[in-house]
Image (cartoon, rainbow, N blue to C red):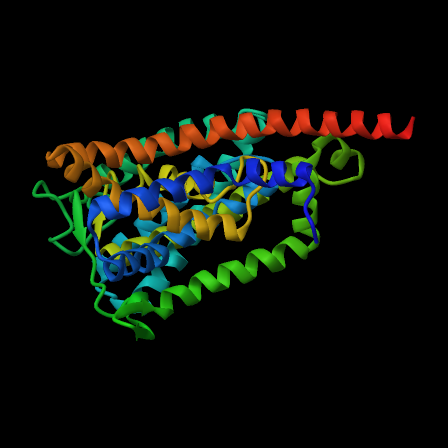
Length: 367
């Protein structure tokens, strides 16, 4: 099937972000001097570690709520579950599953609260969810600093601060038999954690299936037009809350999968970058604040983390200073979100202009 010039322009504008980052990566890889096998190992590791969190963002986008920066509420719930199973001494995959069970009701409550707040901030969901994350982070830190060990008993002395209550800043997680160790397959010298990828496959299948359900169709309708959806009998606010609840619960599971790969839980700052990196990955994959797919999430995760690996070393090799490489890392992580959102606004404007030009051409031909 031959593409017209109009279709080609739309394809290029819709793929502008991933194409740009792919070109930057192609240029930076030789400068970084990393071997191909090393980069493949890093990408496989980071795909298994981060993909679940990125996929947790899809449903709110479908429901017209943009990037859910409030997903860190679910990440906090996951970390609370990990703290409790570490205190109880439950290790390996069973412990991680129990952490998910503990985190689920917390994530549901936080997700409901987040959805209710966002319903009062229609059109400003992204910035509101970001501010809400900061607010809940304060409550989360108060809970761990003063409630745990004083009101809620913590048995393990390795978790509690020297004063007798409050959780330590960093906790070592026993990952010797976690998800990454289940069905570990070696392919061409690359260790592929099939157990973790199984969870990622499950959420992909769930997302595809969910979109076909009545609730999924309602979310899609709400995302397209809330007024028309309300007229059609869809409970718009309830549907929006449900999308945020599901996203928050999935983010809880995603944070547990992420941390079992890292092996260390940063108690108070571990969730700070979760939403930013997940949003950056999704946007780099070609998604927008109004449309995102599973391929966008997976391709974006691979591209973003490829840049995240190679840019610090490329910067060091160009300038000769290690700190410049770290500045490159932070520049990339924060700049990606800004640039992708700017390009999205530009793409939206270009699409409107091309549609108007197409309509004019059609009217001229009809005459």
